[in-house]
Image (tube, rainbow, N blue to C red; front, top):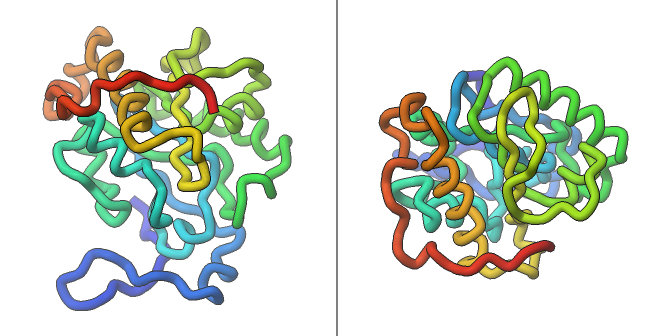
Amino acid sequence: MAKRPGLPEQGPGSSKPSRPSREELQAAVGRTLPDVIAPGLNVLFVGINPGLYSAAVGRHFARPGNRFWPALHRSGFTPRLLGPEQEEELLPLGLGITNLVERATASAAELAPEEFRNGAQLLEEKVARFAPCWVAFVGIGAYATAFGRRRVQVELQSETIAGSRIWVLPNTSGLNAHYKPAEFAAAFSELRETAENSPNMSARHPGSILSVAPPPHSRLHISRGV
């Protein structure tokens, strides 16, 4: 795996990077993050693009307040709550992370529609190369824009990408006020349960958490749409 850009760690024995300063955030504009990826994953999560905080610390979904990591755990994807600094621990579980658009911005609103469409083509090539069972988009709008879809909902999609099944999840950004933590967990849990029951899933990663039941509180109703 490529060496990651980022900030110094807080101190001896700490794996958590320090918080970036305003200057460091500005310096992160346009920066890219290495994928957390390997061949034959069970689920490849696709973010929109790196935010400046994530780009500055060199980790995915790293901004405090993002619900991605808690949702992974509460839904049963991970056996314990991981932080962005532990993202490499996803690979033995058959999970990975990439982004639809590679360059970091302060807001996804700064991205042009053409960037999403180009990102879709690059993602298809990546999926064809690494062949994950499932591709899970973390955000309705990015998926809809990139692939020209209308009326997208948080659920299994009818199409595939390079032979991999597609699932759309809600955007886990702290700015998404339409979902509460329990609803994020439920949305992720529905994907996990569907993936668990997919043919040949456990054969790819025998140690995957997909074979382990999620915490009872993750089985909740899902609110559709964002």
